[in-house]
Amino acid sequence: MRPRRASVSNGVVNRRMRLSPQAILLAIMAVIGLWMVGSLIQEVSLDQSLSHQASQLRDQNAAIAATNQSYRRDIAAVESGAAAEEEARRDGYARSDEHLYIIATPPPPAAPPGGQHANTPSGPAAAIQAVWHFLTRPIQPGR
Image (cartoon, rainbow, N blue to C red):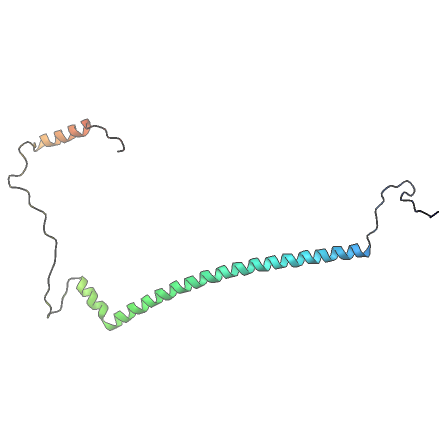
């Protein structure tokens, strides 16, 4: 008969098992692996964030470059005197050797002679009629 070791000693059942060196090594390797995966995820997130910020800065730089180009054109126009001529023309000035033509819209047609219509009251009667019309007009939905 083979000797067996009892799992119960002195009345204690399910006593705690000792950790083997392999189990401790496995736990340490799992912790290191989790730390490495966490670091990798953090680096990927940081890389995406920085890439987004870099693209926003590129867009801002392009907008600033366009604004600077516009300012350079304005400075060149002021230095050449073209801006002064443009301002003078806006104010209605012209060169002495130029012929000035003014294009305007025609005036509205004049009212027919005779003033108001014969049926329209004038003076205080017109004011009273306007108030009466305001008070007695039909109510329209949506207004």
